[in-house]
Image (cartoon, rainbow, N blue to C red; front, side, top):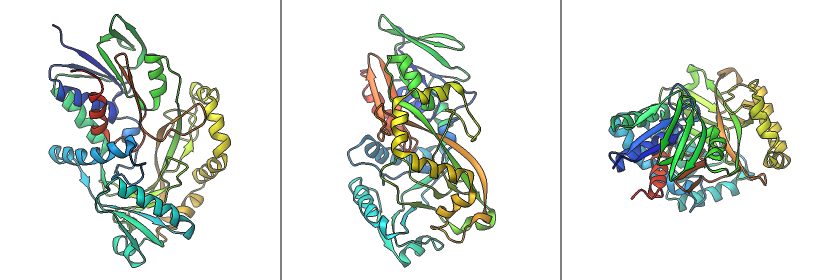
Amino acid sequence: MSARIIGIVGGGIVGLAVGRELTRRYPGTNVVVFEKEDRLGAHQTSHNSGVVHAGVYYRPGSLKAELCTRGRSMLREYCRERGLPYDECGKLVVAVEESELGRLDALEAKARRNGVPGLRRVAGSGITEVEPHAAGLVALHSPATAITDYAAVAGAYGEDIEKAGGEVLLSTAVVGVRRRAGRITVATTRGGYTVDRLVVCAGLQADRVSRLADGVDGPRIVPFRGEYLSVVETKRDLVRGMIYPVPDPRYPFLGVHFTRSVSGELEIGPNAVLAFRREGYRLRDVTPADLWGLVTWPGFWRMGLRHWRTGLSELWGSLSVRAYMRSASRYVPDIGVADVRRAGAGVRAQAVDRDGSLVDDFRIHQEDGVTTVRNAPSPAATSSLAIAEYVVDRMGLG
C-alpha cells in the first residue's frame, strides 16, 4: 500500500507547524508544503513584533484562549530544545486615563480566567519598579509574556519536516484545487500534484486558496498594514520588556506598544492602516486585484461604515510621526519624536464576515479531506504548535 500524501498550502509558521506535527505523529506520511515565495515565513511570520503571548486578551473558552495557553508552553520548550531565542522579559498593560480602568478590570478578569501565569495588578510605584520610565495610573504585569524570532522558529519547523522525509517546495504557488474519486489534485505554477488530504494555511491569501478548495466565499481577508518605529540606540534601555496600552474591545488589534526584540532593538508599533495590497508594506503599494476584492465584498463597506473614524485616525498616525508618537509617548514620556525613526511594516490578514464583523477567533474548517484555516492572526505564531495539534487531531487520519 502506498504511503499517504498530505499537502500543505502555505510555508508560514502555522502551515509549517501542521506539516511538522503530521510527520511527527504519523511517520512515513509524505508531507508536501507548497509555498509561493522563495523563502519560508516571508510575510506575517517575519513581519511582527516577535511577542509570545501569555493569553491576556482572549475570550475565555475561545480557540484563541485555549490554543494560546497550550501553544506558549509548547513553543517555550521547543525553543529550548532547538537553541532558539526565547526571552521572558514580561509585559505591562498600562491604563493612563481613568476612563480606561473599567476596561482594564475586564481584561484582568479575562486573563485570570485564562490562567495567565504570574499575572499581578500594579499601581503607582509598582509600575516604575517593573518599568522605571513608564507612566500610568495602574497596570497589569504579565511576567511570562516573552519575545522570540518567529522567522527562525518557522525555519526550524521546515527543517524538521525535511529531516522526516517531507518536501518543502518554494516558489510554488497553488492556482487550482480539484477533488475526484477520493483524491485531491493541486495545480501549481510548477505542475500538478495529487494528494490524499489538503490543509490550507495561506495567511494573506487564505480566503482565495480556501475558495479554490471548497468553493466557499467568506470570510474575506482585509489586509491591515502595521507600521513600526525604531527607537534610537541611546534610548533603547528605557524599556526593559514590553509596554502595551489597554486595548479597545471593539477591535482585535492591541494598539501601539513598545517591544524589545531578541536582537536588542526597541520598536514602537504596530498601528493598523487599511492596505490596498495583500502584501503591501508601503503606503503606495496597490494591486488592482486586491483593491477589487475589497470593494466588491459587502462586509468591507459595512465594516467601513462602523469604523471609519478610527480608520482615519490610524491613517493620520501613519502619515505623521508626531501624531503617532503623541499617543505612544503617554506611556514612556522620555521617548519622543526626536528619538525614533521609521522602521519596517507588516500586514495582518484580518478576516471580515459578510455582515462587516471583524472575525476575532481562529476559524478552522474541515470537510471532505480538506482543512481550511481561514482566520489565524495573532496569537497564531504563539499558538502554532497547539494549532497544529488541533488540526491534526481533527483530520481523522487514524
